[in-house]
Image 1 (cartoon, rainbow, N blue to C red):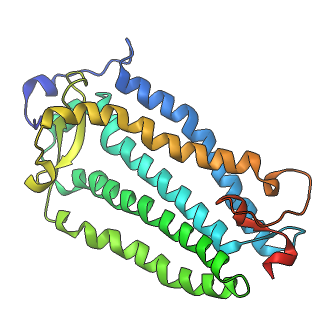
Image 2 (spheres, rainbow, N blue to C red; image 1 turned 90 degrees about the vertical axis):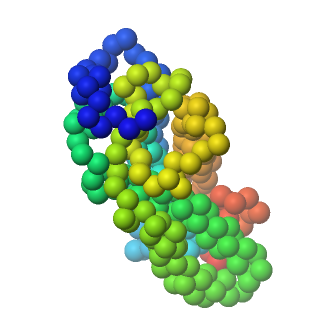
Length: 258
């Protein structure tokens, strides 16, 4: 249900207390996502430092880069999910949305959410492809990975734009979320009928209410597991060997990587 110009939504006032589950979802999400963002930032720093100087541990740079891009894409997807669903669902923007005419600016969070969702699906493919190249081309995998990355990275950026071009003419607006969300819980969406068409619209509220659990779990678990279990991130130095593990393959001993 579109809330534009509806008096009950224009008069709606956001209240932090008592806490409801949309507010709890935002607060809890920030609690574990911010430290995870810091961990990924440390990984980016280590990647940059190992690229600038010679270390005792030689990394598979292309695989490590693909892993970092995969994590950044996942974070982008979660960030846009906060913009489109989680924050508006708290009711903090409800009155403003109800007073605002549907426009192109309101469309942008929804469009960015779609683009970031495609990126979060495509970068794992690049990561797995780099792993396969290392296995099947052990002698010249650096050269093959370099050529693959030069080809795949531009395509990964271009494809999501191609998949979402049909949204360009649309305008964005705010709609009331269905149960179990309370009155005043809204989300950004488009006026395209193809986007909004659902066989059972009443289920969308329940689906959206459990989405954060599944989206955030994978995004948070991967970098923390990588950071706390991989020898590259430990303070002491030691040589490692190539493993079949998808994470352990990021680093190899200097003898194996040449």
